Image 1 (cartoon, rainbow, N blue to C red):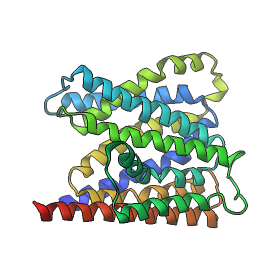
Image 2 (image 1 turned 60 degrees about the horizontal axis):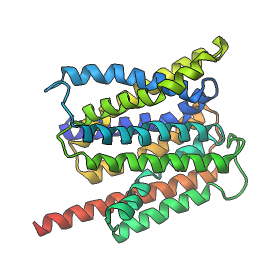
Image 3 (image 1 turned 90 degrees about the horizontal axis):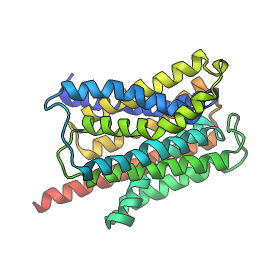
Length: 304
């Protein structure tokens, strides 16, 4: 297997893990309190990522207070608020619908980049955003499918808020000017995440009943910490530096497909026409966004 094929395979594997997090997260919130489960998740991820950084070239990087503050802001948005909104939304909506909503992250990043960084999207990017929004609209057309949850509209709104916080998390990374490897950044964000969930997590742990700690809940939180957080970071960071941005963007299209598949396998959600149409809209949006980035990159190369 060529180095490029290995990189693409690692990106696809990372997106499969991220897609599975929606279904696993729904299993998680059915038994364990959100803050306690999140504390355990980030502690497990930190225990894996910290040794990898320590044993890597250069060891632990020395960072300025500004960079640590930016990483802390990333953790607030991408670790704390994203997790609270996503897992809170999964209490109210189905895993399949949440997976489609969560897949609008590339469109959210493009919109926020336009609003805050004055990066006006190209026509293909605008088409991608409209396609993703059309996919979201499909989720609320017609009757709800089985497994949609007790309050799918409110639940999907919370998941959409999670998407917004994730987009801010991704954009904040651009404010870091110091040389910092993706793995080291992931470690610091995980450490910040554990710190943010420490007090509410321990508070919920004090009222936790032994009956709540089921084998399924333990397996879910371990998978969330080691698989969705640590392993997905490692796989994504390995691949994303070895391919162009358009290829990485297209790889994210695997995520909603994986989310739907795991929702059906693990949660028993029935995949109806609304979820399939919504997924198709979001995938079309991601492909348009990736194509727009590719065109932009080509244009930039032509000017240099």
